[in-house]
Image (cartoon, rainbow, N blue to C red; front, side, top):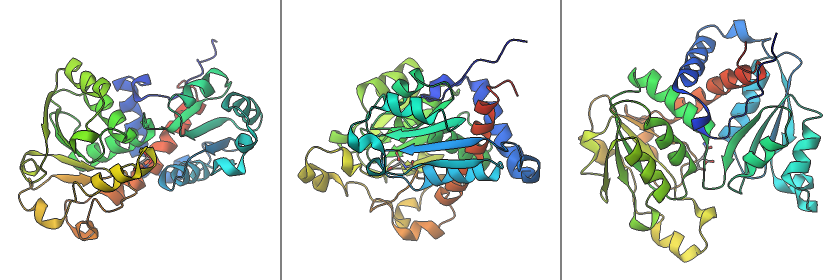
Length: 310
Ligand code: NCD
């Protein structure tokens, strides 16, 4: 029997819509029947190599592996790895694959997970590369939208905040352009518009897209409002960050004319762009979104360990 191909997840486009569907269905099944999965990754090890800070992504990966009966090892900052001594990502990967069956990597440099995958004999998952991509957050987002709204088709999605450096935005757009009837409303300061390659992806996908500089005007047409933080760490100039950071702040009054079923999502962390008062609002879904992140990562780990064959 042929050995199933080694698969990585570097970009959300590495997955076909059918494969995304399979992952979402598996995530739903894990939520429904958790006991059936408690030994599914027994004796397997996940390495989390995080060269950049993280709370949800790293901990949800680790919780996912533990709930599958596996174990975790890794580092949560560049300073506690040999990267500070000058080791390359390639050499780190060649080493870590001797100790782990699957690797989740977060790195400040765009493209680092591609390099890692090239040198890996075990699956590599991109857990965020610089201001580029974040495919597992997108799987989390898709699961949230599908579970909370019942569909991924025909939706109007507003993305608000730092659309330039927000990697979760880039990956979510790359996924949603493939679902029929998606319409985008992009809300950002001019300096933080989505990069041209992302806008081009929307055009190629044939999706309707409108850019706006006010939230109030667009909220009533949205099915999803996806808020993001201004990515301070990606600015070259602190003064520009300070000028732009409070451009858009979501508060409860701005939701007054939202559709009844509209959901507010946020990959988190939140800084100042969303009032804590929104947390109690019936539109808010960002904490359940964080919970779904664990289940979809359980599904992803299982599929990649089985090389999609199991
Ligand atoms: C995001 C990230 O790291 O890109 N967080 C996350 O993974 N949930 C969003 C952010 O940092 O603003």
